[in-house]
Length: 136
Image (cartoon, rainbow, N blue to C red; front, top):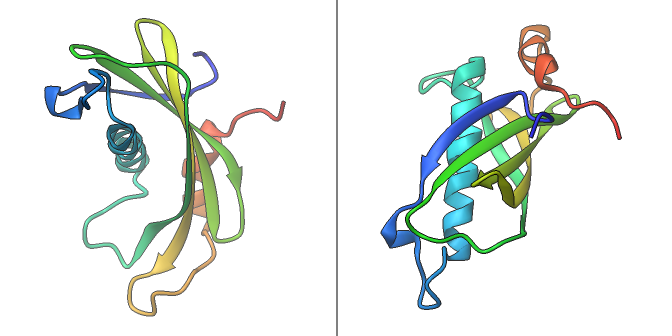
């Protein structure tokens, strides 16, 4: 759990359950979104009316353990890669001290008027760099 530099919390909702009595796979996408948005807000890389914004280009999710209601999640976020116009986040979702799911999300920085990718500027890179995970 120390590999993640940013943390936020989320509650498992009763509505997240499926017929098997555990959290449905779609709810994990919502948990990953909550972690991602909290990270972007905390680092200043998400503002409602900004000229530059992030769009999700790819997301992968690995389910490691069942999750049940009621429960609390701790969501850890780290930066895995910083590219020219995109960056990759790694997320870990933990309940009761165990990792229940991981996600990898590629975000592309775009100009809101042209809807095209733009290079990350030095300020944006500086906001991401403290969360950059060490290479394995």
